[in-house]
Amino acid sequence: MSRSVVTVQHGDTLQSLAARELGDWARWPELARLNDLRWPFLDTSQASEVPESTDAGRVLGVGDPLRLPVPDTPALPITPFGCDLAEEGAALPLVDGLENLKAALLRRLRTPLGHLPHHPEYGSRLRTFLGQPLTLSLVLDLRAEVHRVLSLDLRVAKVQSVSVDVQDDALWVAATCETELGELALLDRVSRTRRG
Image (cartoon, rainbow, N blue to C red; front, side, top):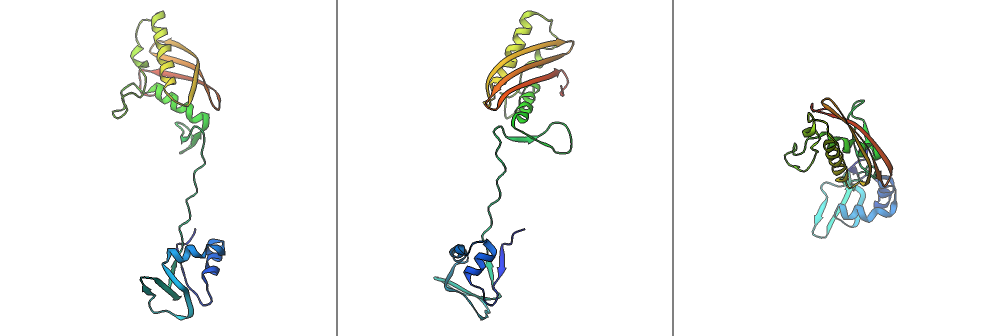
């Protein structure tokens, strides 16, 4: 764990502190600016009672605190299709890339259209078709709805194929999509219950 403050010791210079604490002696001006120091910056010949401050800055002595710059937080690795929690499996597993896209598309297909109050355009109308008599028109409407929903995600370059199979009160959806990372195959069951 990195420190945010160090105590000035006998013999310290801004260069030696920058080398020891920041890994580069040439970063000493950064310490001077951060701590509002003026020349000679440090006086380690004797202990300081209170750092002397003026409009031109201050000089620190032995025992005075010296603030260090906070290191940048390491960035999370960037994945082309983002990273999210997996829907199933061990405690808080992460999925990224095509698996994350696949989970996002399946979630959109399973969610009833208008179910999210602040995102009324999110979801699909697939459940509204369940329980209707199986006709060619119904199958074409189902395929068109799956195609529409998958096309809404900007990560999908092209919906290549969609097939649907209606079984009693459930619907099986199979689709393949073209993405910048390659082809993605989806297979999902949508039923009247909340979880497919």
